Structure formats: C-alpha cells, structure tokens
Amino acid sequence: MKTLLALLKNKTLYISLAGLITAGIIIVLLFDSYIMPKYTNYNEGVTVPDVTKLSLDEAEHLLTSFGLRFEIHDRRAHSAYPANYVIDQSPSAKQLVKPNRKVYLTVNTETTPQVVVPNVVNLSYRNARLQLENHGLTVGSISYESDRFRNTILRQSIAPEDTVARGTSINLVVSDGLGTRMVQVPDVEGLRLSEAQQQIMRAGLRVGEIRFEPARDVTPNTVLSYSPVGPELTEGETIQLIVSERFDAREESETGAVIDDTTNTIPPDTTQIQNN
Image (cartoon, rainbow, N blue to C red; front, side):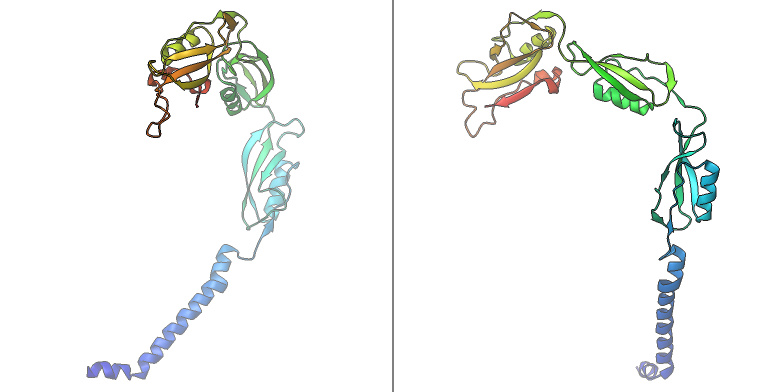
C-alpha cells in the first residue's frame, strides 16, 4: 500500500505518461496529415486524356506523360479506324483519377477476327439472340412464317459451323405460332383436364384460358365445355376450356379449384388459369 502511494506521488511517472500521450498524438497527426495522404495520393488527381483515334504508340506516350498506365482490354475490327488505333478507353476522357491509374484500351485489329456460327434453329428467339451475341454476332432482319411453335427459329441465313467475321449479322426466320394446315378439333367435353390438354396438344392446337365453374354431381377437373368447337382450326390456334370444380369451392374454408397435378407436361406459358 505504501509502495502504491509512493508511486502515485512520483512526478517521474506523470512526466513519462505525459510524454507517451504527447508522442501518441504526434504520431496520429503525422499519419493523418502526412503519411496516409502521401500513401493514398490524397488531394491529388490526374485528368484522363482522350486517346481514342490515336495510334497505340501515341496513346502509350500520352498516358505515360500523364503518369498513367494502360492495358489492352480488347481487340476488335472497326472499319473507321486504321489498324492498331484506339477505338475506346476506360476510364473515359476528362475523368479525374488517381496517379498511376490503369486505363483499359480497346484497339482496332489489323484483321477481322473470325467466329464460328452457332446452330440456333429450333431455339426460342430469346435464346437464339443470346447465342449469337455470345459468339460475337448480331441479329439481322427477322421475318415470320407459319409454324405451330411460336417464337421458335425456323431458319438462319448463315449455316451453322460456317466461319464468318465477328460482328456479322445473321438473319432469322421465326415462327408466328400458326401452322399452314387445318387440323381437327378434338372433342374433349367430359374428359379429365389433363387428358383434354394432351389431346389438344397432340392435335396441333394450344390450350388457352381455363375457367373453373362449380358443378354438382360432376367430378372436379372435368371439362364441361370448350370453344371454339370446330370442326377444324388452323394449326397452332388456342382452345378455351371450362372445367368443373367442387360445388362448395366458394366457401371460405376452401382454397378454390382442384388443379390436376398430372398436367405438368403442358408448358406453363401456354396455359392461363383463372378462377372466378
């Protein structure tokens, strides 16, 4: 106890603590005002010059003179530029960046890169477009012809596996969803919903809106009626169905119509179910 009291009365202790605190404050101030700003180039910036439309050698010299680095990010053909000229840059010109920042350049090639044309026949239009873009190609003109599978690619202007210049446009022929022949409309009244859907699709037609109506003494999910009745329709047209549900399905304790889970063979985008 006496030792502790003597230590607390020792002036040297307080002088040492004051010195440590002062040194700590000085170190913090040095880091904040000098060391860290020097390390991060605080308050320093370089305006990126415009190096597009310059040769690669000229762009390199200009960027270096501004204290910047560069890297060739991509090479592609552009008829408006000579070979080895800069087409694009990132960051763009006039942006303020840190010194020694790397600028990514897109440079015109001496020869146009060649790519292999993918096979997009029988794909949906959306998937076909993505496939072509992934191969460095573009979608050209689009024309439509009658076929039962809507928005499906029927033909492409350049055969699959052909080698063409990157950026080439591929013209596509797309199905409008209607066939060129007349087909018999199947009689689906009285059938289970799943069986009716399958018969409609096998006939070359599509299932349209399905409405549910409560019916006494009729098994739920039975087709009560359909339209148009026929006798023939153009291939690919839609059939609307009215289907039975439990007569008490409108009670609050019920969740509504019973949907037959065996209908999962029908594409979901061809069937719209609406409960009254």
